[in-house]
Length: 71
Image 1 (cartoon, rainbow, N blue to C red):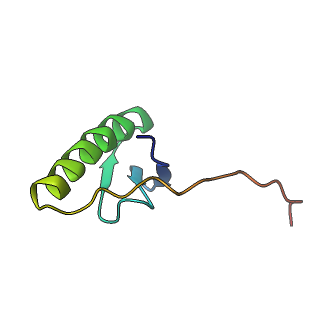
Image 2 (image 1 turned 90 degrees about the horizontal axis):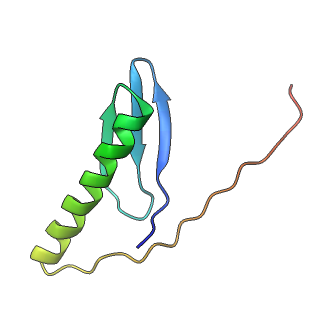
Protein backbone atom coordinates (compact mmCIF):
# COMPACT_ATOMS: atom_id res chain seq x y z
CA UNK A 1 0.00 0.00 0.00
CA UNK A 2 1.05 3.56 -0.54
CA UNK A 3 -0.06 6.16 2.01
CA UNK A 4 0.30 9.94 1.95
CA UNK A 5 2.63 11.05 4.76
CA UNK A 6 2.49 14.68 5.88
CA UNK A 7 5.82 15.95 7.19
CA UNK A 8 5.94 19.15 9.22
CA UNK A 9 8.97 21.00 10.48
CA UNK A 10 8.81 21.80 14.17
CA UNK A 11 11.04 23.99 16.33
CA UNK A 12 13.61 21.28 17.00
CA UNK A 13 12.89 18.68 14.33
CA UNK A 14 10.17 17.07 12.27
CA UNK A 15 6.82 15.42 12.79
CA UNK A 16 4.99 13.08 10.42
CA UNK A 17 1.46 11.72 10.28
CA UNK A 18 -0.91 10.00 7.88
CA UNK A 19 -4.42 11.33 7.24
CA UNK A 20 -5.56 7.77 6.43
CA UNK A 21 -4.20 6.24 9.67
CA UNK A 22 -5.33 8.45 12.56
CA UNK A 23 -3.00 8.16 15.53
CA UNK A 24 -0.04 6.97 13.48
CA UNK A 25 2.67 9.57 14.06
CA UNK A 26 6.43 9.92 14.35
CA UNK A 27 8.88 12.62 15.40
CA UNK A 28 12.62 13.01 14.91
CA UNK A 29 15.36 15.58 14.66
CA UNK A 30 15.95 15.11 10.92
CA UNK A 31 13.69 14.62 7.90
CA UNK A 32 15.38 11.34 6.98
CA UNK A 33 15.00 10.01 10.50
CA UNK A 34 11.31 10.92 10.66
CA UNK A 35 10.72 9.09 7.39
CA UNK A 36 12.41 5.97 8.77
CA UNK A 37 10.38 6.21 11.96
CA UNK A 38 7.05 6.75 10.21
CA UNK A 39 7.65 3.66 8.06
CA UNK A 40 8.16 1.64 11.23
CA UNK A 41 5.11 3.30 12.82
CA UNK A 42 2.94 2.42 9.82
CA UNK A 43 3.94 -1.23 9.97
CA UNK A 44 3.35 -1.33 13.73
CA UNK A 45 -0.01 0.45 13.39
CA UNK A 46 -1.24 -1.93 10.68
CA UNK A 47 -0.08 -4.97 12.69
CA UNK A 48 -2.07 -3.65 15.65
CA UNK A 49 -5.19 -3.12 13.55
CA UNK A 50 -4.97 -6.66 12.18
CA UNK A 51 -4.33 -8.16 15.61
CA UNK A 52 -7.43 -6.40 16.94
CA UNK A 53 -9.49 -7.64 13.99
CA UNK A 54 -10.01 -4.09 12.73
CA UNK A 55 -9.95 -3.24 9.04
CA UNK A 56 -6.84 -1.63 7.58
CA UNK A 57 -7.89 1.66 5.96
CA UNK A 58 -7.41 1.86 2.23
CA UNK A 59 -5.23 4.82 1.24
CA UNK A 60 -7.44 7.63 -0.06
CA UNK A 61 -5.60 10.86 0.87
CA UNK A 62 -3.85 12.77 -1.87
CA UNK A 63 -1.81 15.94 -1.86
CA UNK A 64 -0.74 18.74 -4.14
CA UNK A 65 1.35 21.87 -3.83
CA UNK A 66 -0.40 25.07 -4.87
CA UNK A 67 1.50 28.23 -5.82
CA UNK A 68 0.00 31.54 -4.71
CA UNK A 69 1.34 35.07 -4.97
CA UNK A 70 3.24 36.25 -1.89
CA UNK A 71 1.31 38.68 0.29
